[in-house]
Image (cartoon, rainbow, N blue to C red; front, side):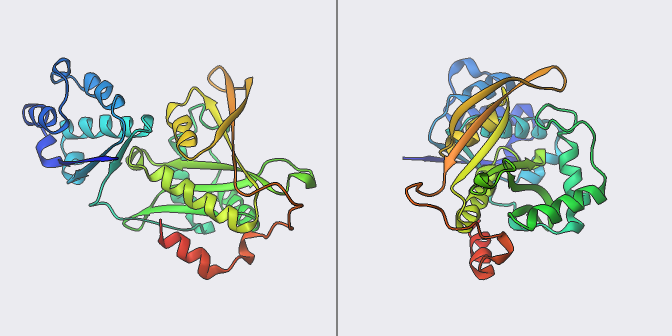
Length: 277
């Protein structure tokens, strides 16, 4: 059974008010004190807990509140047993459009200097817009919005070139740091997976530069199985290992029907799935 704890963000704006309140609300152990690193460690030990955090906007405007919020979000991203909910923030999912290239590049820019993506240089808006067009000709490309502003995206793409790989797709997801640690990645990935199943895909794949605790926990929480490791698969900020994850989307007991390109799906059914996000 999941335990739900509601937190008042306005009580987390200063060190003097935050820590006595957190200690009571979360029943933290004595060693916690008022150290944010210790708070992170305590949060990482929680299992089956949902934290409902209100007045996030007030926390973001306070220098200390922003630090507490960052710790909460990091733990929510790294610990699959901990879920953060932000009821005051209104998130929606829709299909991407080529004109989203600029805002989505702002999200992707946060990752370009990391090993999370093996791309070295940030694409131009024109290049990114063409990628959206190319992907949406076959697969879903989803945009996560908060108050009308894109703060994340997820899409699928072909895993291999040969015809026999038609029923396997590789998934990618990127979130603005302000949208991490809230369970949004899990919901957005789940939405993408459901749409792929509607197309007739048999297998979803994830490719993760390891170590990456947040991404590995996301795949595990959604029922992916780690099926392999490619040591020293790429060089970016050093040699990097890549782990492969797979999730079956449908039985393999009969020859598959031809894959349905995403634009050919019933758009009313697609819209209903997006609304359920």
